[in-house]
Length: 125
View (cartoon, helix red, strand yellow):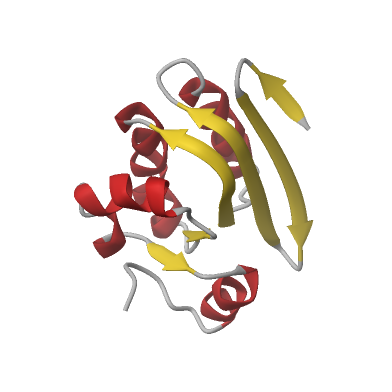
């Protein structure tokens, strides 16, 4: 578990899928930490990524930018970022900026894995 300021990042690999749990606050101060973490995964060609938001208390536009900065490269390599267990508070920020049109937002890990296994890429249905 990495920890800096008010952000914790935990990553587990299951069947070639990276499950990243983020906890705390994802803002201008902590976004570079997650940015570097995702870059390391992408540079290792670990491009099937699920982000678990269940423990994220706050996200700012800088936090959202982390996902936008990587999604095109990840999809061009044949991967995707799928997002699960988003709280209403965090979802409202994503929704306000139209992110549900760009990313798969799923209820749980099982649904996200199903979409990976069936090559379903892109925004939510």
